[in-house]
Length: 116
Image 1 (cartoon, rainbow, N blue to C red):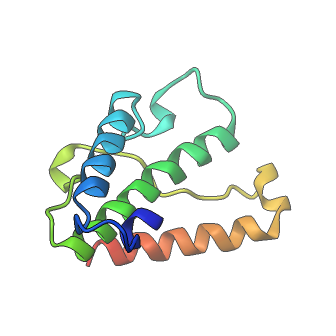
Image 2 (image 1 turned 120 degrees about the horizontal axis):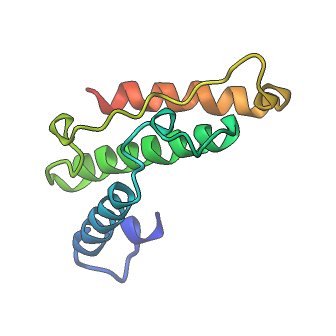
């Protein structure tokens, strides 16, 4: 986040735009754009939830950067990503942490904003 606003950097986001595009491509290479339900090796619900959170944070960063610097989105709806929104299952251990419920609500709101 510092790189967005750093006063000594006069590139107006060029470095951070390239860096985010590289991070997004790396995330796609390891499969973060695919829902973890598609992979039988991933059984832990917490791991699946973190997977989804990471992808949707990238969507949010991409939308934020597009808005701030007037660059096109790096992740389009045409990119064939199928990751579901992060969610909590009532039987999951994740519900034991009340802050997790807040995080999930906030992430859903962030996603709705990125769709605008």
